[in-house]
Image 1 (tube, rainbow, N blue to C red):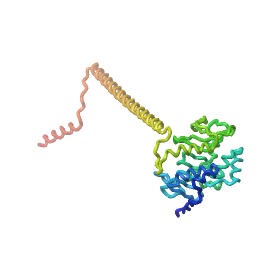
Image 2: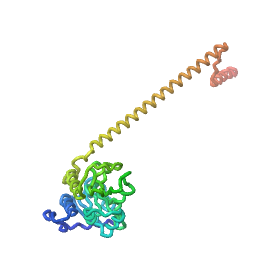
Image 3: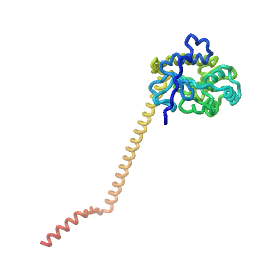
Image 4: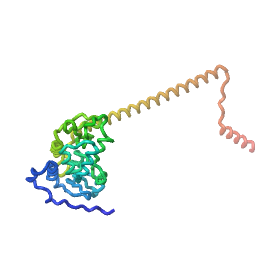
Length: 303
């Protein structure tokens, strides 16, 4: 298969730091990612995805050269017709900040997937399902929706520091953004007044987890507790296996003892029965000895 060609992203296309204040909030978020991670590389994929920050020690993806992995991915924006189709599908009008975001980037993949707003999958974006990290926003609201979640909660992405499924959702009644604890509980772990505040706080937090070389320099929140939990589970599993092994050995020893006792009892009964009759049990001679004696007698007769 012919290797896909990449079009370099012209650096003069993006504003300088002193011009960032003139941008709207999605562009400011992009400018923050671009200025902090472009020194690790940036490209424009064949599908129009802006790739920023080559991530070290990772395997390649389907539409990237082998060995490349990008920390941040801004997908092409939705057309107005596609945005209207998404709102019609979910049956409510999105807040203005969500409209601005999807008009700038259809979802996204940031900080190696630890901040991941989902996108609207359709015929144009179906190619992103494999290899680029675009997740369908329909999944958390239909097939993977949390059990018993009220209808006014709209799940649109994930933000976690523990490799867990901590979803983000919009409370349509209050307009607040919440973070869930796990997939079975929509109890709010954190709350933000807007989508912009959520993204800005997440970026400020996640910026501290990598150094300028793209190497993670501190463990995720709760990672040590998670490792300790796994170690405890392994220890308990090993103890259970050892207990089962000892129990099997004990049963085998008991079965062996019972077998010996039964054999001794049978031999005792046989001896007592033979003593009552007064008959001595003759020990049968081996056939080889008889044959050997016969051969000797035959030899003597011939002499």
